[in-house]
Amino acid sequence: MDAMPVTSAAEETLDPSDWADVQHLSHRIVDDAVAYLRDVRERPVWQEMPGDVRDFFTASLPQSPTPLAEIYGDIVDKVMPYPMGNIHPRFWSWYMGSSNFTGALGDFLAAIQGSNLGGGNHAAALMDSQVVDWCKQMMGMPASASGTLVSGGSMANIIGLTVARNSKAGIDVREHGVGAIERPLRFYGSDQIHSCHRKAMETLGLGNKALRRIATAASLRIDIGALRAAIAEDRAAGFKPACIIGNAGTVNTGAIDDLQALARLAHEEDLWFHVDGCIGALIAIAPENAHRVAGLEWADSIALDPHKWLHAPFEAGCALVRDAAAHRKTFAVTPEYLESTPRGLASGQWLHDYGLQTSRGFKALKVWMALREHGVEKFGRLIDQNIAQGHYLSGLIEAEPALELTAPTSINIVCFRYRAGGLDGEGSKALNTEIMLRLQEEGIAAISDTTVQGRHCLRVAINNHRTRREDLDLLVAETVRLGNEIAAA
Ligand SMILES: *Cc1c(COP(=O)(O)O)cnc(C)c1O
Image (cartoon, rainbow, N blue to C red; front, top):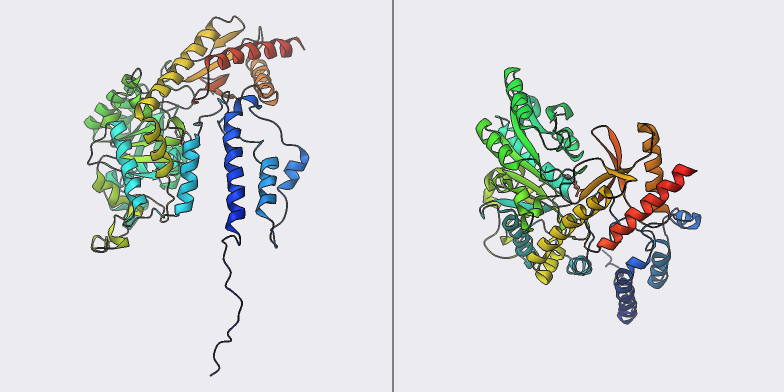
Protein backbone atom coordinates (compact mmCIF):
# COMPACT_ATOMS: atom_id res chain seq x y z
CA MET A 1 0.00 0.00 0.00
CA ASP A 2 1.14 3.49 -0.78
CA ALA A 3 1.98 5.72 2.12
CA MET A 4 -0.10 8.88 2.65
CA PRO A 5 1.34 11.69 0.52
CA VAL A 6 3.49 13.92 2.61
CA THR A 7 2.82 17.59 1.87
CA SER A 8 4.83 20.51 3.01
CA ALA A 9 1.72 22.64 3.68
CA ALA A 10 1.27 23.55 7.33
CA GLU A 11 -2.04 22.68 8.97
CA GLU A 12 -4.47 25.55 9.32
CA THR A 13 -5.54 27.21 12.56
CA LEU A 14 -7.83 30.05 13.59
CA ASP A 15 -5.00 31.72 15.47
CA PRO A 16 -3.69 34.96 13.95
CA SER A 17 -0.64 34.70 11.71
CA ASP A 18 0.75 37.77 13.46
CA TRP A 19 0.01 37.99 17.17
CA ALA A 20 1.51 41.50 17.36
CA ASP A 21 -1.17 42.73 14.94
CA VAL A 22 -4.00 41.35 17.00
CA GLN A 23 -2.42 42.72 20.15
CA HIS A 24 -2.33 46.20 18.67
CA LEU A 25 -5.97 46.07 17.54
CA SER A 26 -7.08 44.63 20.89
CA HIS A 27 -5.53 47.56 22.73
CA ARG A 28 -7.51 49.91 20.52
CA ILE A 29 -10.73 47.99 21.19
CA VAL A 30 -10.17 48.26 24.95
CA ASP A 31 -9.44 52.00 24.69
CA ASP A 32 -12.62 52.50 22.67
CA ALA A 33 -14.61 50.42 25.15
CA VAL A 34 -13.48 52.57 28.07
CA ALA A 35 -14.45 55.73 26.19
CA TYR A 36 -17.78 54.21 25.18
CA LEU A 37 -18.88 53.74 28.78
CA ARG A 38 -17.18 56.90 30.09
CA ASP A 39 -19.12 59.06 27.61
CA VAL A 40 -22.43 57.17 27.54
CA ARG A 41 -24.29 60.07 29.19
CA GLU A 42 -23.44 62.33 26.22
CA ARG A 43 -25.11 60.05 23.68
CA PRO A 44 -28.83 59.66 22.93
CA VAL A 45 -30.45 56.85 24.89
CA TRP A 46 -31.79 55.42 21.61
CA GLN A 47 -31.73 56.30 17.93
CA GLU A 48 -33.36 54.82 14.85
CA MET A 49 -31.02 52.90 12.53
CA PRO A 50 -30.63 54.43 9.07
CA GLY A 51 -31.30 52.31 5.97
CA ASP A 52 -27.65 51.52 5.27
CA VAL A 53 -27.26 50.08 8.74
CA ARG A 54 -30.31 47.84 8.28
CA ASP A 55 -29.04 46.77 4.84
CA PHE A 56 -25.63 45.94 6.27
CA PHE A 57 -27.20 43.05 8.21
CA THR A 58 -28.56 41.40 5.09
CA ALA A 59 -25.09 40.57 3.70
CA SER A 60 -24.79 36.89 2.84
CA LEU A 61 -22.57 34.20 4.36
CA PRO A 62 -18.92 35.27 4.01
CA GLN A 63 -16.90 32.91 1.81
CA SER A 64 -13.52 34.58 1.94
CA PRO A 65 -11.51 36.33 4.68
CA THR A 66 -11.83 39.93 5.83
CA PRO A 67 -9.14 41.66 7.94
CA LEU A 68 -10.15 41.89 11.58
CA ALA A 69 -9.50 45.67 11.65
CA GLU A 70 -12.08 46.13 8.89
CA ILE A 71 -14.60 43.98 10.75
CA TYR A 72 -14.06 46.00 13.91
CA GLY A 73 -14.59 49.20 11.90
CA ASP A 74 -18.02 47.88 10.84
CA ILE A 75 -18.90 47.15 14.46
CA VAL A 76 -17.92 50.68 15.46
CA ASP A 77 -20.17 52.13 12.74
CA LYS A 78 -23.06 49.73 12.58
CA VAL A 79 -23.44 48.12 16.01
CA MET A 80 -22.07 50.22 18.85
CA PRO A 81 -24.26 53.33 18.20
CA TYR A 82 -27.51 51.31 18.34
CA PRO A 83 -27.75 49.49 21.67
CA MET A 84 -30.98 48.37 23.31
CA GLY A 85 -29.82 47.63 26.83
CA ASN A 86 -29.70 49.66 29.93
CA ILE A 87 -26.20 51.18 29.94
CA HIS A 88 -27.53 54.73 29.55
CA PRO A 89 -28.38 56.66 32.76
CA ARG A 90 -31.89 57.38 31.40
CA PHE A 91 -32.77 53.87 30.28
CA TRP A 92 -35.72 52.70 32.40
CA SER A 93 -37.64 50.41 30.03
CA TRP A 94 -38.81 46.89 30.97
CA TYR A 95 -36.41 45.59 33.60
CA MET A 96 -32.68 45.18 33.09
CA GLY A 97 -29.40 45.78 34.85
CA SER A 98 -26.81 48.27 33.61
CA SER A 99 -23.84 45.94 33.13
CA ASN A 100 -20.40 47.13 34.28
CA PHE A 101 -16.91 47.33 32.85
CA THR A 102 -15.44 44.75 35.21
CA GLY A 103 -18.15 42.30 34.23
CA ALA A 104 -17.28 42.86 30.58
CA LEU A 105 -13.65 42.02 31.34
CA GLY A 106 -14.95 38.90 33.08
CA ASP A 107 -16.86 37.79 29.97
CA PHE A 108 -13.76 38.39 27.86
CA LEU A 109 -11.48 36.44 30.18
CA ALA A 110 -14.05 33.63 30.49
CA ALA A 111 -13.99 33.24 26.70
CA ILE A 112 -10.19 33.35 26.63
CA GLN A 113 -9.80 30.77 29.37
CA GLY A 114 -12.45 28.71 27.59
CA SER A 115 -13.74 26.48 30.39
CA ASN A 116 -16.89 24.42 29.97
CA LEU A 117 -18.93 24.50 33.16
CA GLY A 118 -20.66 21.19 32.54
CA GLY A 119 -18.49 20.10 35.45
CA GLY A 120 -15.10 18.65 36.20
CA ASN A 121 -12.08 19.37 38.34
CA HIS A 122 -10.89 22.87 37.45
CA ALA A 123 -10.81 26.41 38.83
CA ALA A 124 -13.84 27.74 36.92
CA ALA A 125 -16.01 24.93 38.36
CA LEU A 126 -14.96 25.84 41.89
CA MET A 127 -15.76 29.49 41.17
CA ASP A 128 -19.17 28.57 39.69
CA SER A 129 -20.03 26.73 42.91
CA GLN A 130 -18.64 29.60 44.98
CA VAL A 131 -20.87 32.16 43.24
CA VAL A 132 -23.89 29.87 43.84
CA ASP A 133 -22.84 29.72 47.52
CA TRP A 134 -22.63 33.53 47.61
CA CYS A 135 -26.15 33.73 46.13
CA LYS A 136 -27.43 31.36 48.86
CA GLN A 137 -25.76 33.54 51.46
CA MET A 138 -27.29 36.73 50.04
CA MET A 139 -30.75 35.10 50.11
CA GLY A 140 -30.37 33.65 53.60
CA MET A 141 -30.66 30.09 52.27
CA PRO A 142 -28.91 27.34 54.27
CA ALA A 143 -25.46 26.15 53.18
CA SER A 144 -26.99 22.72 52.47
CA ALA A 145 -29.15 24.19 49.66
CA SER A 146 -28.06 23.80 46.05
CA GLY A 147 -28.25 25.99 43.00
CA THR A 148 -27.12 26.61 39.47
CA LEU A 149 -26.23 29.55 37.28
CA VAL A 150 -28.42 29.78 34.18
CA SER A 151 -29.13 32.20 31.34
CA GLY A 152 -31.56 34.38 33.27
CA GLY A 153 -34.66 34.57 35.41
CA SER A 154 -36.92 32.72 33.01
CA MET A 155 -34.66 29.67 33.06
CA ALA A 156 -34.17 29.99 36.81
CA ASN A 157 -37.95 29.89 37.29
CA ILE A 158 -38.22 26.82 35.04
CA ILE A 159 -35.58 25.05 37.13
CA GLY A 160 -37.40 25.81 40.40
CA LEU A 161 -40.83 24.89 39.04
CA THR A 162 -39.53 21.63 37.53
CA VAL A 163 -38.21 20.53 40.92
CA ALA A 164 -41.57 21.56 42.42
CA ARG A 165 -43.51 19.50 39.88
CA ASN A 166 -41.35 16.41 40.28
CA SER A 167 -41.38 16.63 44.08
CA LYS A 168 -45.17 16.99 44.33
CA ALA A 169 -46.37 14.80 41.43
CA GLY A 170 -46.71 11.66 43.57
CA ILE A 171 -45.20 9.56 40.76
CA ASP A 172 -41.85 9.36 38.95
CA VAL A 173 -42.49 12.06 36.32
CA ARG A 174 -39.09 11.56 34.72
CA GLU A 175 -39.85 7.93 33.98
CA HIS A 176 -43.60 8.02 33.29
CA GLY A 177 -44.32 11.58 32.15
CA VAL A 178 -47.02 14.01 33.20
CA GLY A 179 -49.74 11.84 31.63
CA ALA A 180 -49.29 9.40 34.50
CA ILE A 181 -49.99 11.99 37.23
CA GLU A 182 -53.18 10.83 38.94
CA ARG A 183 -54.69 14.10 40.08
CA PRO A 184 -53.87 17.12 37.87
CA LEU A 185 -51.42 19.46 39.58
CA ARG A 186 -52.30 23.06 40.33
CA PHE A 187 -49.81 25.92 40.74
CA TYR A 188 -50.77 29.34 42.12
CA GLY A 189 -49.51 32.87 41.61
CA SER A 190 -51.01 36.34 41.51
CA ASP A 191 -52.58 37.93 38.44
CA GLN A 192 -49.39 40.04 38.25
CA ILE A 193 -47.13 37.03 37.64
CA HIS A 194 -44.47 37.30 34.90
CA SER A 195 -45.20 35.75 31.51
CA CYS A 196 -42.25 33.36 31.83
CA HIS A 197 -44.35 31.27 34.26
CA ARG A 198 -46.85 30.60 31.51
CA LYS A 199 -44.03 29.33 29.31
CA ALA A 200 -42.77 27.25 32.22
CA MET A 201 -46.19 25.62 32.75
CA GLU A 202 -46.43 24.87 29.05
CA THR A 203 -42.89 23.48 28.92
CA LEU A 204 -43.51 21.32 31.98
CA GLY A 205 -46.46 19.73 30.17
CA LEU A 206 -48.93 20.95 32.80
CA GLY A 207 -50.54 23.58 30.60
CA ASN A 208 -51.25 27.22 31.19
CA LYS A 209 -54.57 26.51 32.93
CA ALA A 210 -52.75 24.61 35.68
CA LEU A 211 -51.41 27.98 36.86
CA ARG A 212 -54.25 29.72 38.69
CA ARG A 213 -53.92 33.49 38.75
CA ILE A 214 -55.21 34.80 42.07
CA ALA A 215 -56.64 38.31 42.32
CA THR A 216 -54.56 41.08 43.81
CA ALA A 217 -55.70 43.81 46.16
CA ALA A 218 -55.24 47.55 45.46
CA SER A 219 -51.63 47.09 46.60
CA LEU A 220 -51.19 44.63 43.66
CA ARG A 221 -50.04 41.98 46.17
CA ILE A 222 -51.68 38.57 46.12
CA ASP A 223 -54.90 38.28 48.12
CA ILE A 224 -54.03 35.56 50.66
CA GLY A 225 -57.68 34.83 51.51
CA ALA A 226 -58.54 34.33 47.85
CA LEU A 227 -55.52 32.03 47.46
CA ARG A 228 -56.57 29.92 50.45
CA ALA A 229 -60.09 29.61 49.02
CA ALA A 230 -58.76 28.62 45.57
CA ILE A 231 -56.63 25.85 47.08
CA ALA A 232 -59.63 24.47 49.00
CA GLU A 233 -61.83 24.66 45.92
CA ASP A 234 -59.28 22.80 43.81
CA ARG A 235 -58.83 20.06 46.40
CA ALA A 236 -62.60 19.57 46.56
CA ALA A 237 -62.71 19.37 42.75
CA GLY A 238 -60.11 16.58 42.64
CA PHE A 239 -57.00 18.59 41.71
CA LYS A 240 -53.70 18.32 43.58
CA PRO A 241 -52.49 21.74 44.71
CA ALA A 242 -48.71 21.57 44.31
CA CYS A 243 -46.95 24.94 44.38
CA ILE A 244 -47.35 28.59 45.37
CA ILE A 245 -45.28 31.09 43.40
CA GLY A 246 -44.63 34.28 45.36
CA ASN A 247 -43.55 37.51 43.67
CA ALA A 248 -40.64 39.37 45.23
CA GLY A 249 -41.29 42.37 42.99
CA THR A 250 -43.81 42.16 40.14
CA VAL A 251 -42.75 43.35 36.74
CA ASN A 252 -45.71 45.75 36.38
CA THR A 253 -45.43 47.71 39.60
CA GLY A 254 -42.75 46.13 41.80
CA ALA A 255 -45.33 44.88 44.31
CA ILE A 256 -43.90 42.36 46.76
CA ASP A 257 -46.27 39.62 47.96
CA ASP A 258 -46.45 38.87 51.68
CA LEU A 259 -43.80 36.16 51.46
CA GLN A 260 -44.08 35.19 55.14
CA ALA A 261 -47.82 34.60 54.80
CA LEU A 262 -47.28 32.62 51.59
CA ALA A 263 -44.56 30.51 53.22
CA ARG A 264 -46.89 29.73 56.15
CA LEU A 265 -49.78 28.85 53.87
CA ALA A 266 -47.57 26.62 51.71
CA HIS A 267 -46.37 24.86 54.87
CA GLU A 268 -49.92 24.33 56.19
CA GLU A 269 -51.12 23.01 52.84
CA ASP A 270 -47.98 20.95 52.12
CA LEU A 271 -47.23 22.88 48.91
CA TRP A 272 -43.90 23.82 47.36
CA PHE A 273 -43.07 27.50 47.89
CA HIS A 274 -41.21 29.06 44.97
CA VAL A 275 -40.27 32.75 44.90
CA ASP A 276 -39.84 34.63 41.63
CA GLY A 277 -37.20 37.04 42.91
CA CYS A 278 -35.90 38.15 39.51
CA ILE A 279 -36.52 41.75 40.49
CA GLY A 280 -36.57 41.80 44.25
CA ALA A 281 -34.76 38.83 45.79
CA LEU A 282 -31.55 40.86 45.94
CA ILE A 283 -33.33 43.47 48.10
CA ALA A 284 -32.30 41.03 50.83
CA ILE A 285 -28.81 42.65 50.71
CA ALA A 286 -30.11 46.26 50.84
CA PRO A 287 -30.01 47.48 54.47
CA GLU A 288 -32.87 49.99 54.27
CA ASN A 289 -35.28 47.76 52.35
CA ALA A 290 -34.42 44.15 53.22
CA HIS A 291 -37.49 43.97 55.50
CA ARG A 292 -39.69 44.08 52.39
CA VAL A 293 -38.63 40.56 51.35
CA ALA A 294 -38.80 38.90 54.78
CA GLY A 295 -39.89 35.28 54.29
CA LEU A 296 -37.76 34.84 51.17
CA GLU A 297 -35.38 32.69 53.20
CA TRP A 298 -38.20 30.17 53.83
CA ALA A 299 -38.69 29.43 50.13
CA ASP A 300 -38.18 25.91 48.75
CA SER A 301 -36.76 27.48 45.62
CA ILE A 302 -35.82 30.99 44.46
CA ALA A 303 -35.17 32.45 41.02
CA LEU A 304 -32.91 35.49 41.06
CA ASP A 305 -31.28 37.51 38.33
CA PRO A 306 -27.68 38.74 38.68
CA HIS A 307 -28.11 40.53 35.32
CA LYS A 308 -30.66 42.80 36.99
CA TRP A 309 -29.66 44.21 40.39
CA LEU A 310 -26.08 42.85 40.39
CA HIS A 311 -25.65 44.52 36.97
CA ALA A 312 -23.84 41.54 35.46
CA PRO A 313 -23.58 41.75 31.66
CA PHE A 314 -26.19 39.52 29.99
CA GLU A 315 -26.66 36.66 30.64
CA ALA A 316 -26.70 35.54 34.27
CA GLY A 317 -29.56 34.05 36.24
CA CYS A 318 -29.52 31.78 39.28
CA ALA A 319 -31.87 29.11 40.62
CA LEU A 320 -31.58 28.04 44.26
CA VAL A 321 -33.23 24.94 45.76
CA ARG A 322 -33.40 24.30 49.51
CA ASP A 323 -33.47 20.49 49.14
CA ALA A 324 -30.29 19.74 47.22
CA ALA A 325 -31.21 16.06 46.82
CA ALA A 326 -34.57 16.95 45.22
CA HIS A 327 -32.74 19.32 42.88
CA ARG A 328 -30.25 16.71 41.74
CA LYS A 329 -32.93 14.03 41.46
CA THR A 330 -34.85 16.22 39.03
CA PHE A 331 -32.04 16.66 36.50
CA ALA A 332 -29.19 14.22 37.11
CA VAL A 333 -28.47 11.77 34.35
CA THR A 334 -25.07 10.81 35.71
CA PRO A 335 -25.52 7.62 37.73
CA GLU A 336 -24.02 7.97 41.20
CA TYR A 337 -21.33 5.36 40.44
CA LEU A 338 -20.11 7.37 37.46
CA GLU A 339 -20.18 10.64 39.32
CA SER A 340 -16.49 11.24 38.92
CA THR A 341 -13.15 9.64 38.62
CA PRO A 342 -11.04 9.47 41.80
CA ARG A 343 -8.48 11.91 40.40
CA GLY A 344 -7.89 14.05 37.36
CA LEU A 345 -9.99 16.37 35.23
CA ALA A 346 -13.26 14.47 35.70
CA SER A 347 -12.97 14.22 39.49
CA GLY A 348 -15.07 17.31 40.20
CA GLN A 349 -18.85 17.63 40.48
CA TRP A 350 -20.99 17.27 37.36
CA LEU A 351 -22.61 20.69 37.38
CA HIS A 352 -24.84 19.73 34.43
CA ASP A 353 -26.74 17.47 36.85
CA TYR A 354 -28.53 20.56 38.23
CA GLY A 355 -30.21 21.89 35.11
CA LEU A 356 -31.06 21.35 31.45
CA GLN A 357 -27.83 22.38 29.75
CA THR A 358 -24.86 20.07 29.22
CA SER A 359 -22.18 22.54 28.12
CA ARG A 360 -22.33 25.64 30.27
CA GLY A 361 -20.53 28.97 29.90
CA PHE A 362 -18.31 30.51 32.57
CA LYS A 363 -20.92 33.04 33.77
CA ALA A 364 -19.59 33.02 37.30
CA LEU A 365 -16.46 35.02 36.50
CA LYS A 366 -18.16 38.33 35.67
CA VAL A 367 -20.34 38.11 38.79
CA TRP A 368 -17.42 37.06 40.99
CA MET A 369 -15.10 39.83 39.77
CA ALA A 370 -17.64 42.62 40.33
CA LEU A 371 -18.65 41.29 43.77
CA ARG A 372 -15.00 41.17 44.82
CA GLU A 373 -14.19 44.57 43.38
CA HIS A 374 -17.03 46.41 45.12
CA GLY A 375 -18.10 44.14 47.96
CA VAL A 376 -21.69 43.07 48.51
CA GLU A 377 -22.47 46.09 50.72
CA LYS A 378 -22.05 48.45 47.79
CA PHE A 379 -24.52 46.46 45.71
CA GLY A 380 -26.94 46.65 48.63
CA ARG A 381 -26.52 50.43 48.82
CA LEU A 382 -27.11 50.75 45.06
CA ILE A 383 -30.39 48.85 45.46
CA ASP A 384 -31.42 51.20 48.27
CA GLN A 385 -30.41 54.11 46.02
CA ASN A 386 -32.65 52.93 43.16
CA ILE A 387 -35.59 52.43 45.53
CA ALA A 388 -35.07 55.93 46.97
CA GLN A 389 -34.98 57.26 43.39
CA GLY A 390 -38.28 55.48 42.67
CA HIS A 391 -39.88 57.25 45.61
CA TYR A 392 -38.24 60.54 44.63
CA LEU A 393 -39.79 60.25 41.15
CA SER A 394 -43.19 59.43 42.71
CA GLY A 395 -42.91 62.59 44.76
CA LEU A 396 -42.14 64.68 41.67
CA ILE A 397 -45.17 63.20 39.89
CA GLU A 398 -47.47 63.86 42.86
CA ALA A 399 -46.29 67.47 42.94
CA GLU A 400 -46.89 67.97 39.19
CA PRO A 401 -50.54 68.76 38.37
CA ALA A 402 -50.18 67.56 34.75
CA LEU A 403 -49.20 64.04 35.89
CA GLU A 404 -50.72 61.38 38.15
CA LEU A 405 -49.57 58.10 39.67
CA THR A 406 -51.61 55.12 38.48
CA ALA A 407 -50.35 52.54 40.99
CA PRO A 408 -48.74 52.71 44.41
CA THR A 409 -44.92 52.86 44.24
CA SER A 410 -43.45 50.00 46.24
CA ILE A 411 -39.79 49.93 45.19
CA ASN A 412 -38.09 51.22 42.03
CA ILE A 413 -40.95 50.91 39.53
CA VAL A 414 -43.18 53.95 38.99
CA CYS A 415 -46.45 53.83 37.02
CA PHE A 416 -47.96 57.16 36.02
CA ARG A 417 -49.61 59.04 33.20
CA TYR A 418 -50.02 62.46 31.72
CA ARG A 419 -53.49 63.64 32.70
CA ALA A 420 -55.24 64.11 29.40
CA GLY A 421 -57.97 66.46 30.58
CA GLY A 422 -61.30 64.97 29.59
CA LEU A 423 -59.72 62.22 27.46
CA ASP A 424 -61.16 58.73 27.91
CA GLY A 425 -59.19 55.48 28.23
CA GLU A 426 -58.28 55.15 24.54
CA GLY A 427 -57.51 58.85 24.14
CA SER A 428 -55.28 58.81 27.21
CA LYS A 429 -53.52 55.68 25.96
CA ALA A 430 -52.85 57.23 22.54
CA LEU A 431 -51.51 60.44 24.06
CA ASN A 432 -49.29 58.72 26.62
CA THR A 433 -47.99 56.24 24.03
CA GLU A 434 -47.02 59.20 21.83
CA ILE A 435 -45.15 60.77 24.77
CA MET A 436 -43.26 57.51 25.31
CA LEU A 437 -42.29 57.22 21.64
CA ARG A 438 -41.12 60.84 21.39
CA LEU A 439 -39.03 60.46 24.56
CA GLN A 440 -37.28 57.57 22.79
CA GLU A 441 -37.04 59.19 19.36
CA GLU A 442 -35.66 62.45 20.74
CA GLY A 443 -33.05 60.37 22.58
CA ILE A 444 -34.13 61.74 25.99
CA ALA A 445 -35.20 58.65 27.91
CA ALA A 446 -36.30 55.08 27.33
CA ILE A 447 -39.40 54.16 29.32
CA SER A 448 -42.10 51.58 28.65
CA ASP A 449 -45.83 51.30 29.21
CA THR A 450 -48.20 48.78 30.73
CA THR A 451 -51.76 48.32 31.88
CA VAL A 452 -52.46 48.06 35.59
CA GLN A 453 -55.96 47.23 36.82
CA GLY A 454 -57.35 48.12 33.42
CA ARG A 455 -55.62 51.49 33.14
CA HIS A 456 -52.90 52.16 30.60
CA CYS A 457 -49.87 53.97 32.01
CA LEU A 458 -46.24 54.87 31.48
CA ARG A 459 -43.78 52.83 33.48
CA VAL A 460 -40.29 53.70 34.72
CA ALA A 461 -38.11 50.94 36.19
CA ILE A 462 -34.94 52.36 37.74
CA ASN A 463 -32.53 49.42 37.84
CA ASN A 464 -29.56 51.54 36.92
CA HIS A 465 -26.37 52.45 38.78
CA ARG A 466 -25.82 55.51 36.54
CA THR A 467 -29.16 57.26 37.12
CA ARG A 468 -29.02 60.51 39.12
CA ARG A 469 -31.94 62.47 40.55
CA GLU A 470 -31.37 65.19 37.92
CA ASP A 471 -32.18 62.56 35.26
CA LEU A 472 -35.57 62.05 36.89
CA ASP A 473 -36.13 65.81 37.09
CA LEU A 474 -35.47 65.96 33.34
CA LEU A 475 -37.86 63.07 32.67
CA VAL A 476 -40.72 64.82 34.45
CA ALA A 477 -40.03 68.17 32.71
CA GLU A 478 -39.81 66.55 29.27
CA THR A 479 -42.90 64.39 29.81
CA VAL A 480 -44.93 67.48 30.69
CA ARG A 481 -43.47 69.44 27.74
CA LEU A 482 -44.28 66.66 25.25
CA GLY A 483 -47.71 66.03 26.77
CA ASN A 484 -48.59 69.72 26.47
CA GLU A 485 -47.32 69.87 22.88
CA ILE A 486 -49.18 66.76 21.77
CA ALA A 487 -52.40 67.75 23.58
CA ALA A 488 -52.31 71.20 21.95
CA ALA A 489 -51.70 69.86 18.43
C1 LIG B 1 -37.06 39.80 34.35
C2 LIG B 1 -38.06 38.95 35.02
C3 LIG B 1 -38.20 37.60 34.70
C4 LIG B 1 -37.45 36.97 33.54
O1 LIG B 1 -36.09 37.05 33.72
P1 LIG B 1 -35.08 37.04 32.47
O2 LIG B 1 -33.77 37.24 33.10
O3 LIG B 1 -35.50 38.18 31.58
O4 LIG B 1 -35.25 35.73 31.80
C5 LIG B 1 -39.07 36.83 35.45
N1 LIG B 1 -39.78 37.36 36.45
C6 LIG B 1 -39.70 38.66 36.78
C7 LIG B 1 -40.51 39.19 37.90
C8 LIG B 1 -38.84 39.50 36.06
O5 LIG B 1 -38.77 40.80 36.35
